[in-house]
Image 1 (tube, rainbow, N blue to C red):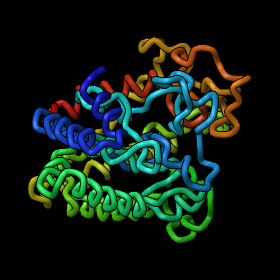
Image 2: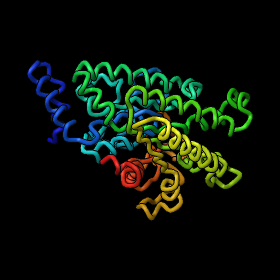
Image 3: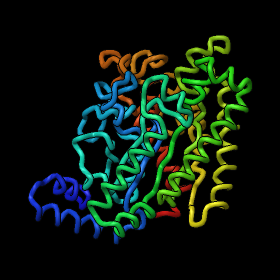
Image 4: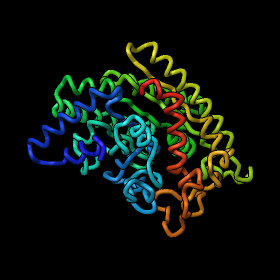
Length: 358
């Protein structure tokens, strides 16, 4: 059993001396690590199960989700197994999985070394979170503030503040704003007649968000932009006129928006003293995987492992009609990458962008 596993198990004890020992072990871990914790904001690409505990249909805490997870159980991750924050946390020597903040099975001793506030289906735009009744980004920040109070009560002001400033913040969000909101509903399209106008609106919201968490102590931030959205199985399935090829309109949009996010990262790094924010763009490597799956050990990139692989995700993902080996598929369901894809993307992210924090 490694140190982090021991900490997690001991932290669930009730005896005061066990609590004291847990605190000592956590502080020793922090003193030895350049990045003592991984803190996550975003959508289903990084949600480790917060939606399990809110009334929404945007959930995945049932089979076949999670069948290849560490214990083989569904956790609320939209994957057959682990997702990028889990792999990043493991690479930094912290722990194998980042727990969801709303999961009552975990306590502040677990969250001290990593916590996820993300919610599947959310976006920068509050209107996006309303579509499926999920946690808006502003509420994720409120949970983060609550977490800070608990952490300070648990470890003391000075130790907690050091953890919060040295932690690595992973942010992955934005796809739902376009696919589940702007292009799916009419309200924002009436307000912003051109998608470029909506992009700029989102960039403004993103800047406000990053300035707020910076003000709360965040200093090491990794921002992941949009994937090649037009190549998601669901979008390909609807692209009938182009024989189910990738929807280039959506891919071009992703490239354009990612460019604006890159500009924002540079701006914030210049404006905010001590900020180390990274434009962790994985668009190119993700597109390479989709276009040349065999180069990465995959057999199928057009459909997901679940059901027909074209439309199913969430409750429509029937375990009776799911592939046997998800490692052959780039996508797990019609919208989300498989565990293997997430690991490849995470390794790329670590080697190209996050290595400066190791």
